[in-house]
Image (tube, rainbow over all chains, first blue to last red; front, top):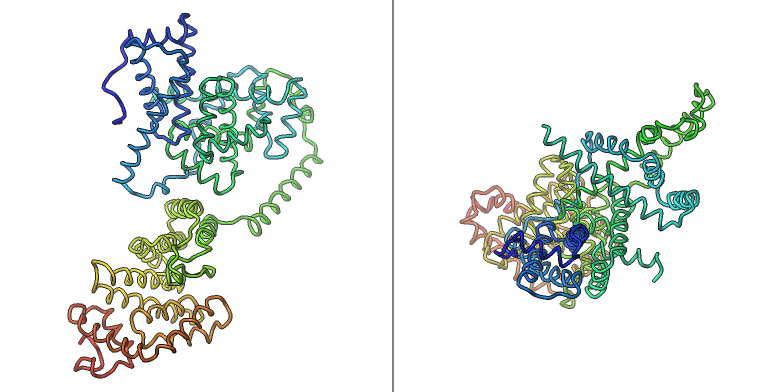
Length: 194
Length: 391
């Protein structure tokens, strides 16, 4: 990735970055993790491949500025500004790469359908089992139906739990995120056991 | 903005269809507000679910598929959603049963608390299965549109205002040529990209004659003639007696010949036109009623042997006298009749060029084939052996 600077993140610079998030170390680390997730999603949603690497590049640039003594008042806004610059560089780089290799990208656009059992299925079963029963039932019920029936079912579910529909969405989302994390760990364990 | 409106805006952002200004506003918001970011993630999950459940429109699906192709992380989330969907639509109840194991079964699904499932339930289940089967049959027969057809519909829609080539593709509706007043080809590029996505993907996943034929048609309309020729030749190898593929390959060769005539490949067009002629005549031999092949033959003659063009349009009009294609054929015929003298000159000049170039192309079967199609050539321009031009 040519957009990367030669500067690399030192322990000292990373400490300063966490301090810039919060003087409480744990809170700083949590905020760091949130901003990293936002950056990754930002690059993905901008259709930029290697989103992780560009997210880290953005973090490195911000960390460098802090390490150099720059005072930043609105840290999230600053991250966003740097991310925009990095994304422009990434898109230029991509255009250059496309010009060199103009193979039809459309050929790779759709993900092939799965026809064989997948280790994810095994992991999903395991992870579902590991969820607290209430959460397991909630996420299964939440995603049970399709289209119109789904909307009605979710409203019924929210009513039965005495919470607004949006709170139900957030709750289901958080369970889903934990389920996805569990599956990712399970898959990593499975591949390292091979 | 209402929550519904906000969700719509987020979905449009995720599909890349917001303006730059709108995007930046949304991005600033989610960078500074964790709740807004969580809302974005939820919207993305919902989009992923719609994608794997095939609930997105074709355009949105293509846009989203392009994003998935660029992001392994997103692809992984899509895979999770797919597995999750399969789990819910397949042995979902067993998943529920796993997590409900700690509870008495009757509290979860009361009808399962009986030790035996009654025959009434079995009959009901059988009826449901039959109904689903019938429903699937109806869906397959009347609603389901196979991918190749969806791709070709997208392609035709993309070029519904103008057709980009003079030749006529098999199975395509009429669209006028753009150049009558010097206009550019009007094309809906989103629909065109959608067609490419569907057709190329299908040709990769299921490389049969139909899918390769369709990709060849796409390349032909995209004016990538050498790729079109390659795909259509492959399709023909898989289905050698398909008149439509012969006709489209003839069309691709015709367009490639026209391109060669004006570019650095000048001189090569004679052989290419000859090959086009072979395929068009073969198409007509297999299916004499194939209008597309007859139309293309007339266009080929217009470029190759103007003396034969008028007759070819008349032959076409015997089979089709009313369609928009026929209107174009009549217009071409009227043009020829108005310039009959000019054509006579063209014919001689054109044939003379064939004889000149014949020296280099002689010996190829296409030139021999071509020569056999010149019954009315003026004797002054023919070789000493009047039967075969190249020999």
